[in-house]
Image 1 (cartoon, each protein chain N blue to C red):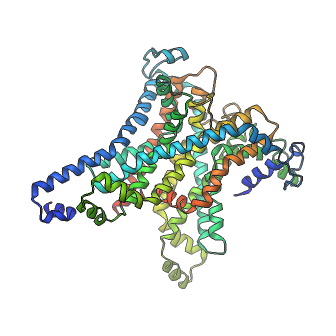
Image 2: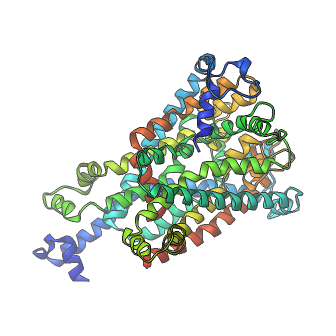
Length: 253
Length: 316
């Protein structure tokens, strides 16, 4: 299972002249950092754009889905069932469909090849998921606690901000992790809505790299390693949330 | 009804009834206040693009009319074009094979691994976490890594085949193998998801059942078929349905590894739609949207099955 990942790292260290060697070396014995130097020199702006887009997507996703989760979990308005159904259905729409629709809309709005446009499009991957996670975790907050706040004269907004949000830390982390990863790895919106822009994300960086140069595979793989760093960091730091997110998103809701 | 209200509001026991009702009403307004952003968002960034997409599929668009917005309405003509296209039946077959084979292998390998990880051993948690890696990697990274693994001249796979005396295979550049190659890569990517869900499903099966089965003399294989598998059925069904919905949409892997080629040999609905709309210099948005909408309808049908199934599960 992990061999392809190992191979990516191995190739990223392999000197160019050994790339076509047969059989390929199993370890980067005469390893070189040339691939990384080339990747750093050419891919840094793409990485920067990806960071901005992914963080923007996280902020937008949490800002939209946390209040919605609170309302669905605790205030239980009429029509909540319909909204839940629509959110579920939204997750089933293929990316290419959303991309084409967005292309038509952005053409009118002048949002093609813009970072905010990409942030909004990427957030559609995570918002429905975010609402479900927030609803699930916020419904475990005891009603008595919110009742007590009300008795003390706190408004609903205040209750949400000072009690519900701080108690939903786990949900915030889970949603942020997924929103970040999905935005970071998005290729379809990047290639349809942002292709040729002055700020392209790293997925397009790799894509152009493969297209333009079929020789420097160590540099391509070094870029792939860079692009994988967030996933690796998240795996180490937030493993618990990742597993919780997959199961909560898929089984419980 | 009134007792419910009293219990829910708590302090209302001493308050007069009209005030309680007003508070309930206020709550409802407050709830929609909190839901307003997400509702507006759904309308603007789901409903409206989807509407535009349906509109695209019903008009005759060229690049120029796309910019000027004066494309003539042609009804279902684009759908007719798509259905008569020689690429239609192959794309349908590829989508079915790619999806069916992918989820069958993802599920069975994921289940085998989940059962394996059920026995706790040293480092089992760490190893299980490492198995998540393929799923967390950006798809473009996985796809380009697999492209290099399967490269005809210098890929490790052909080198390994050569070592056991088999000739090289043109994994990505021959029509016989391209669909196999993208399916293998997709299976690899989907295993972790299946593993995580099935593993958490296994956790809910009480250990006492296994002890009882062992006391009755059931072999490990019998314990799996008679205890694990039947009790896991609800979780399995959800895993398979989600796998189906996700796999129907797969685009990145195929596009990056083969672009649906050579000569359409690995084209699915998702890549076909993309190629029509964005993959050429002369985009045909109308047919592209039509192909995409056929895909939406398929996904929604399975989606409704999923929702129904979930309702039943919640009810029981």
